Length: 266
Image (cartoon, rainbow, N blue to C red):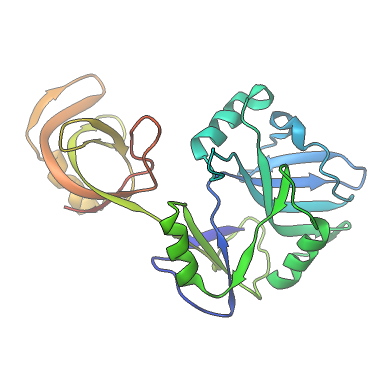
């Protein structure tokens, strides 16, 4: 079950509010014979990458949905470290934690038709005590605005708001689950664009490279960039007179680039 975006948090007692964990969406299964398999959100099996999660003590016939994370020295999710571990697999040095937030199957029976609050109780029964390998996502009832403010003050990714009565819709995106992202904003320069596929090259006011923007650019805006004077070009890129724009992005990477920059305005 996937989320839709909401621009602002809100207070509604019909919703549960959770921290949006910055990691890898993860499905963990134990079949009726006790065989463990792990899947990404795209249904790719990734079991061999995480041998430390092979025995979490979950009963037969269990399927959990959640997020796989690596935490930094402050205990915050570190997306780059998570992806490094994912790419290096079992040989990776970053320890992972599976934070479950929903139950798809319990004791061999699908529970997707139950209200979310009932599934949360089943999850609490399955994971009565959190550990470094397996934990359950904590939640509040309502209080979305205040929780979002607290999350932003800690520079965390955002929050998720879910209807208490929502059913789990396998493989579907639903307005019953909403994410509110804690974006950062910056005034940057478009210094060029890719030739073969869409992407604007970004730099800061001092000319330091900030990465490529592929998201959120209306067709009407693209023409302004493509009509700008070309100063230089290579096999892959054209470089233009800098054009100032405002962008939003998730965070700065360790290399100083913008993560997932998206166009906001001129």
